[in-house]
Length: 210
Image 1 (cartoon, rainbow, N blue to C red):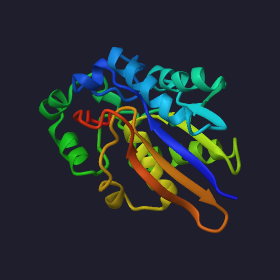
Image 2 (cartoon, rainbow, N blue to C red):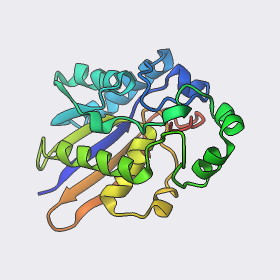
Image 3 (spheres, rainbow, N blue to C red):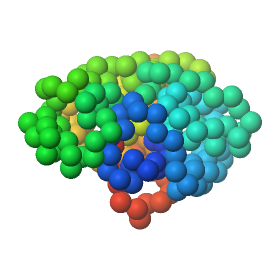
């Protein structure tokens, strides 16, 4: 029995557009983000998901709501699917982080854990998101689950599920807004990556997954 899990990044926000670090700040979707969510929901709805789960942060919850409105389902919420906590970085633009906290920023750019600033470690992030995705899969064994989450959370959680080292996770390109990853899970082969960065708006630049 194979279970499919779609890991779906939320739509665009004003902070995405401005290169501002969101982390766990509860920033809403903007007009573009709502349009992205509606268009992506049309594609995902055609897959007939059996369950929908989302981070409780508004940008992910409202993205999931666009799909639920089409499929007439109820969204479950899981705080473990929240974005990485970026501590003192939250609310700053990436340029401001680079200027004000250069040593921390350099480690982040290199794909290493940030030392200082109360930024969540990559291992902690990967473990909590992976735990959330494992439980999401249990909502519909043998079916299809859509999990609406965030860019950094999705990438690190997926890497943890697949057993990849941090250096290998870094080779995954950042998810575009409202794009998704498809995973499969079964007792024989475990978790496998089926598709990555799928969706609409493919001609738009990729905002930082923060």
